[in-house]
Image 1 (cartoon, one colour):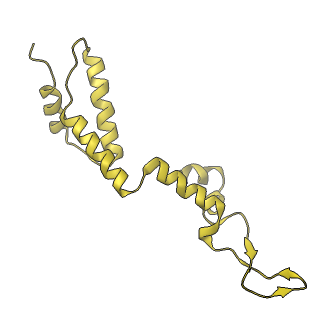
Image 2 (cartoon, helix red, strand yellow):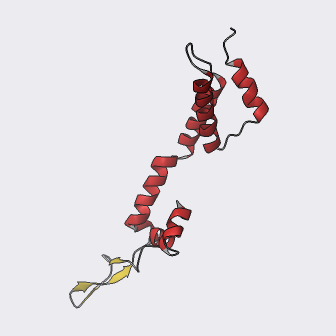
Image 3 (cartoon, rainbow, N blue to C red):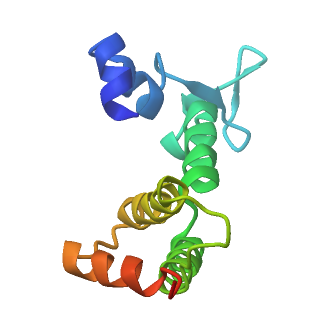
Length: 126
């Protein structure tokens, strides 16, 4: 995402992380000046864009617990992969590739030998 935004404009990433301009908020604790509240800089964690970005990261990537659960499920899928009755080799290969891609995205990498052994184990005896 960082590269995509940077490709649109060099400053786009800073707009997402820092906001497009100096953001201020009313100081509810401070004194009033000419009947209007004193303004102070808004902390970064209160930027709405940042909140949205953080929520998107959480939804797409999840927290550490979610990542561990996803990895656990993907490893179990890989360990239990079997060629279904009526599957062609192409269909079986697509399912295996999908699981391998899912594992790679979760930073779990198997060697070609491990993948080949699991693919052969999943083939029917006939």
